[in-house]
Image (cartoon, rainbow, N blue to C red; front, top):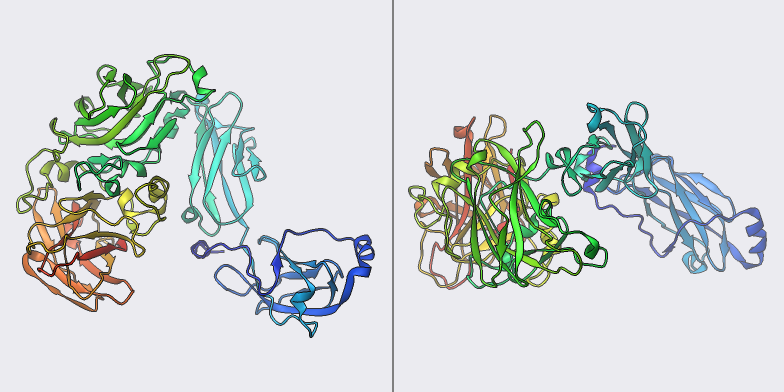
Length: 602
């Protein structure tokens, strides 16, 4: 069973003209009991396939009432005759090892006047995947840990043996949360995505029993923290400084490590003290955050000053930033400076000097402290988290630093180029779950696991907001009726990559809309801050040609995507920043749109 099965939509079964229900046992006594309800006999035939419509041979098809049984042939087809027709319906089972059993209930109306069923087709879900691994004891030199409970559901559970090994089998290919627990140890969870299964098998190893550094989190947990690749993140729905601040550019909501009571609000991404009936029992604690968010960040001289824009609804809020150096002999959460107090409903900037950690990739934690027990309800609103080589104070100020030469007014600084972290991923999608201004957080929160580009790239809204939930993919666009400008973009996205031979072809999958050309540019910036507009080596657009200042203009409005492929081999062995920008290339009175369908480094 290959990984390709994970690419199909997982459906339990499809039945034409029949009603599906859970399997029911039916003994001979049942048959006698319901004998007076049998109204005739018929036949059932059809095709059994998997999720990718591939025929499945060797499936046992059984009418549970009459016990008549057949097996599908090499073409996945079956023909079951002598089926009793029950006035209230009876189940037919489809069974094969490695697949979930499917039960179909047939009713008299299913058979029609001729007492036959022409085509009852069933899809069966592969259920022979497994998750296995080894669990070790962090407090005893990572020796095998026996008796640890590992589970993915209440029914799918295993216990580690003397070698610390476990295996959970009979799984459907889908995403899972693996929970690892043992009395006396902090419970550990690990995420397994469908893409983690290779030939139906996924491996999850873990070390448990380590000392908690943050609430519920050990050093082993924090080593898996997602990276904050870029130097700026924003939160909230208010467009009070549009387009710099707008719900469509709130990508703190894509962070996956909010811990405690978190909510997206108009003013920002909000850390709230846990204050339900159980939470009110929590004691005051000025050492450990009550609610927090964390991520890994490589600190350099160009991003060692961290600025956090905050406000509150219920002053005063006591909060701060902690840093965890996982390379230390005994990692600890170190408070940067003193506990901060936010006591204003206006946005304020607080800066944190991280220069102590230059050259290290550390875990950064932003959190709020509970200062009293009982009914203690305070909300700390995070509007912006930014990293630069210097502090800044203005609410709407772009990240400080010298502009990259040739990209004046792009607000792409030399500091951003040098200190952004190279991506681990090489494939990004532009589509994700749908949402809207008032309910975007549930969609954004899934972007990271889906590999959505905007969970990893940064969007720069110089003049225009994006369309975050366009049906074809994330979409950046121009204003309408603006003077042509192929030098300065309306907006762009950027991310850094480490380029190497064999993975130096960059493919951008996109489309546009309408009869107007869309003008866009792909710019590569080397670490010496030399910016170069690259021309594609190939494309599949309906119309495409070079335009001014390194832009390309194209049309591809046939409800399909096209590809633009770029050669990055000149940067083999180097880190390079990639920018994809959209421009007002001509005066036509319309917004011109560029879809981020997919991005691949091949």
